[in-house]
Length: 576
Image (cartoon, rainbow, N blue to C red; front, side, top):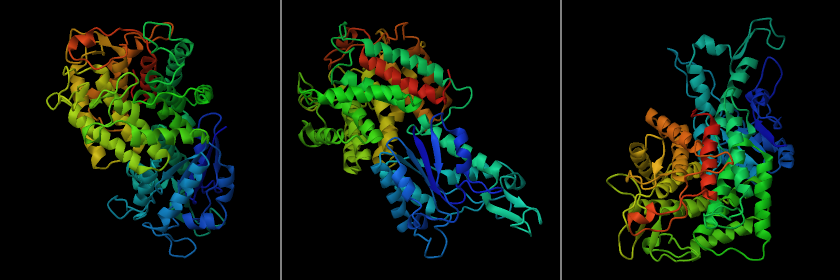
C-alpha cells in the first residue's frame, strides 16, 4: 500500500481547530489504498525540521513507490538562526537533501512552492509573498527532474478569483471572546480554517492529477470515464499477452523477445499502470523483465534493442531494484561510447541485419533518445539528457521538411538525400510522440528544448492540415490514395492530446484533432482486443511504392501505441 508522506509547516500540518493545514484535507482526494502520513509541524523551516529529528521517521518509513510532498518557506524567511535559510544557498541545499533521501529510498519527491499569504496592498491587489523562495523551489525541481507544483501561484489565483471578503472566509478569523487562546480576536493572513484547508488541498490534488507520475495516487473527478478506458486497455493488453508471434507480422506480435515492437508495447503498458495504479500490470512488467534478464542469451545491441530499456529505467525509478541498475548503465554506456555514429555525431540507425551506414531515421528518437533522457533524469546524469536533446536537434535539421513541417523517414550523409522524400506516417508519429515525451520527462525549458518544441508545433500544425475526415492518417501523409494507418494515428493522437493537456497547444482545433484521431483508433480495436489497420515493420524506402506495399496486420507496437493514446484519454482532459 503506497504512502504519501508530507513534510512542511503550519500551512500544511493537521493542526487543531480552528487551524487546519491543507495536508489535513488531502486524504479526501487520494485513491483507495493510498495512505497519507502528514508529518508537517507548525513553525518549522527546512533547517529546523531536520535539526529537530522530525525527518527521521519519514526517512525510516519511506518505501519504493511512496511519495514525499515537500512545502517549506514561510519560516525559512524568519530571521532567527535556528530557522532561517538563504533562498540561493542553504534553502536549496536542504530541499536537495530531502529529495535525494526520498529518491535513494525509491520514493518520488515532489516540491511545492509555499502557499501564498493573503496580504492585500490596496485596490484589491495581492502582495507577492515569499520573495525568492518559490523560484528556488522550482529551480531544484528542474535540476532533479522531479515534479514541481506551483502552489504559490495556484493559491494566489484562487484568492484573486473572489473578493477580499470572500477569501477571508478561508482563513482563521475570530471575534473577541470567541476563543480563549485569542481573547482579543484574531484576523489571520496565513493560516487556514477547515474550509480553506479543503480549498487548498483541492488545488494540490488538481496539480497532482495533472502530473503523470502522480496520477495513480489520486481519485479521479466524478464523471471521468477512467474505468471505461481502463477496460479497453485491459482488452488490448490481454490480446497482446496471449499472442505468440505466429502471425503475418513476422514476429512483431509477441512479447517473447527483446526487440523494438516489444519495447514500444512495454512503455505503453507501463504508462497504463502509471495512470491506473493497477498492481497487476506492474507485476506483469516486473515478471517480464526478471525473465528476460535471467536468460543466458543476451540481446544483440542495436538501435531497436535499446527500446525495452526505457521501461526498465521507469521500473528502476519505481522499485529501485538493484538488479536493474547495471543493465541500464551498460546500455547507456553502449549508446554513448560504442553505438555507430554518422557525420556530426548522429546516432546511426544500426539494426541486427544492417548497419545503415551514415543514416538517420525518425524511429531512433523514440527507440533510443527517450531512454537516454529518462536514464539521465533517474540517475542524475544531465549530460545524457544533453545528448538526447542534441540528437533531436540533429534529426530535426536533416529530417524536417522546411516547407510543409512534416518529417521525412530518413537521411543519408553518404549520398546526402532523403531517399524517396517519403513523409511516412509512423515516422512522423515517432517524432510527434517522442518530442512531447522528452519535454515531459526532462521538464527542461532551455534553448534546445524550445527549439525542439517549436519544430514539434510546426509539425503538429501540418498534421492538422493533413488529417483525413475519418480521423486517421494515410501511411504516406501527403499521398491521399494510400491506406489509412492506425499506429501512426494513435501516436499522433497521444502527442497532440498531451500537448493540449500540458498547455502547449492552446487552439481549440487541436482538441478536435485529438478527439477525432482518438475515436478513429478506438474504432479499430476489434472484439479480441487486436488493433487493426497497422502497417508492418517498415525499412527505408527508395520509392513511394515501398510504403504502399507494406503488409497491414496487428503488431505489438500497434497495441503499445494504442495504450499510450488511451492513457491520455484516461486523464479526462479531452473527452470523446
